[in-house]
Length: 209
Image (cartoon, rainbow, N blue to C red; front, side):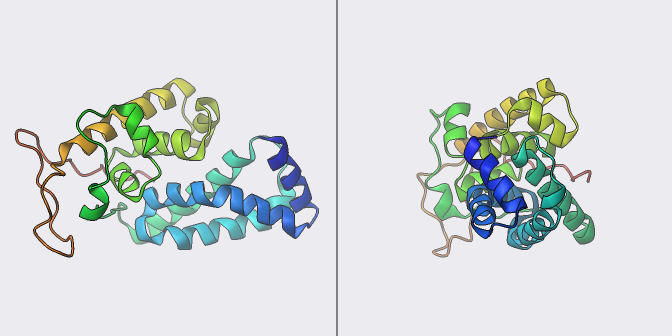
């Protein structure tokens, strides 16, 4: 944890509103991207629940990786939400957003560079859950493999492997769409045609909670 973030945590624990505001502004964008891939359009609501719990439990935080602590809370709230909804998150992939994705020549590294876009997050939501979360925690939240492993209850090596596979699969998904064709529907309701000889991306497996 950076010294600046560490100072903000200490200040927020002492009741300083500026300290808490700094934490929110620093962490909310990444948490929201993470939650968007997990719960789709309900991400804002789940993020609000997350920050309510963070503010309530902050006095009991005793040190360590604060980002990991916050994302663990966010993940728990997301899993609770999905259990209540009894559904797997599903994000539509807008054609307009897909037009800005990478070309066939791009690699997993290029996929990682575009990880924060709305379209990339939508595609991440179609990855197998283990790969999707590993990519999000490593590339969006910025946790190292060991810390991400603690959040997920998995070994660091397994997290590294899942993140690598997820990025490669994400790059393949990006290359699967023929982005040269304009959408048939002016509102973007009709998805782009996949390239010849390649199958449509499979739906993600159900979340195991």
